[in-house]
Length: 465
Image (cartoon, rainbow, N blue to C red; front, side, top):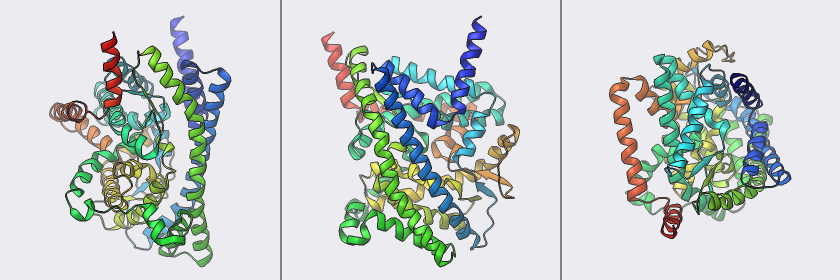
């Protein structure tokens, strides 16, 4: 009887997962809203609004991929450089992840870790972004493929989850300050992982007077450039430049310019729908947490899609994209041909923008360092990723390329470090990794006191008790 119930639950869960984020997100948000005390009509409307906003963002990103992808490929082909690992996009990698035979185990490990950390008051993040669990799970899948050890696979995912939830806590104040999104954290590895490089590099740039004194931002660019500083016009100009470097004809150049201009206009509008649906959930979650956790403050963990519509993020990404393509050609040791995931560069630079408080010069330097790491780590892990895709029967259109890669999976620096430690002499590397995590945890929680507001609320309630 219990096995039948468990099987039925797993079948239902898998059905929802297979529907994709545009269906799964409304369902999850509706359930979360009901848990937090919203009426079913309000919860469903919030969930559906978020789903519509997410679908809109996805449509715009797909539109961006369709237009920028061929142009990027043409730019690379004109250099006559042969890169044998084609970037097939995060969607293909997600398909590889969800097709793995151990995916159910890994998903429940992530859920379990989040619950345990919340109970122990070791995190303030309640992650409802289940769809993006695949960013954490793919590390375990790749570890399992290499080591054949379920224990190491589970361990790697547990480490990914702990690091992700803590990084979400630590980055929440700057997300709230820069993007004006209260009560929300972003446990999306594709955005958070950039901070591993961005934080130390930002500290280093602050030691250089040229960067430390620079206050140049997108708003400043608009001020000094006037008509040409408008985000709509900037999108047009960048699109035209990409088309020219791709060797397009005049008609295609103009079409690409208008398309990139459209991206800068449409994504903020779709993001506003996302936020419209989010606010009732966020407000009810805060009331619920104050009641159930005796004044404890929780952050609702959402997809980083809620911030990629910011003009600073989009403009930084549009500058980084052509530079990344050029860098792929000359970067020593790179095998990755940037293609499908160029459209998700906004996710990779979004937290960088928040960290630098919109400093455009820093954004470009740090953004290029992040994309360089994506190319190097993607090159290093492309053989394993290709082998996994074949093993689960995923048919990927690689256009004759020998290998596949992506700006997701273990191309991201956080994921690569965990993958490396669990596959290369784990008996030595894993303890070192855990020590580094523990020291970092101590520094940000006990020395820097990043989440002072949340901690103060808990301490106040302890004194009352």
